[in-house]
Length: 102
Image (tube, rainbow, N blue to C red; front, side):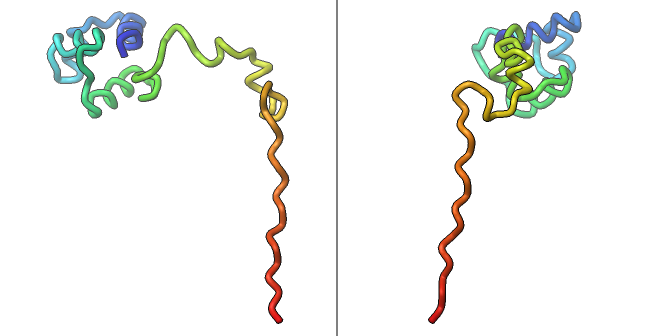
């Protein structure tokens, strides 16, 4: 959260005080979250994700400077799974043994 929240705030020209007011917390709380000295409660995380239109996963573990699409080319992203490096086609399903009754 330390990198992601300041980045999101900067894209909207939002100060810590403004974010704090929207969330009903103190500016010091926002400062502590961004310094990784504490973590916001779940209800605050949900509000932050709604404010900035991002997922909770992005908010908690995300790095705004690095995305999956940066690591993979469009061709790799759009390729079927079986064509991607290291991917193996699924094994065909084996019919279940029939149970014959005498």
